[in-house]
Length: 152
Image 1: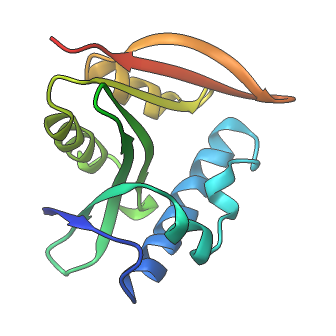
Image 2 (image 1 turned 180 degrees about the vertical axis):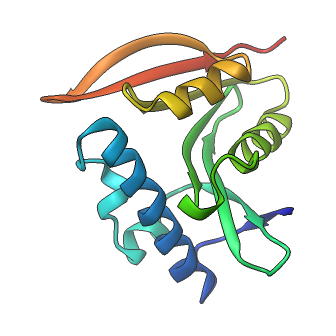
């Protein structure tokens, strides 16, 4: 697996990334029992308009099987998205992508949010040292768990 910088602005990568994102968030929607996850309903134009930096995981066949995106300031990195194709889960792709994002974060604080009932994602972040910073109901009935990883 190769982890490399990508951009959804590139064609046809943007279309491939959008399909990957929708497939991954469909799984999360099922896990949490709610399909009101904004990236699940995003258009290609909306995806391309997001102010995010991206890394992609490409398998030996050249397929995009995972991606992570973040926003950053001088003090903090906000992991905005982590998506792994449903056919490629449980192979360490998500962990490898988050670890690479952490390397790029350097000494900055890193935050991430996931569906409160998304147990696989929560185990991943907790296993990487993230601490639960709280849970919030972002819209009625949709709960998010917020995590933070403080600089060492």
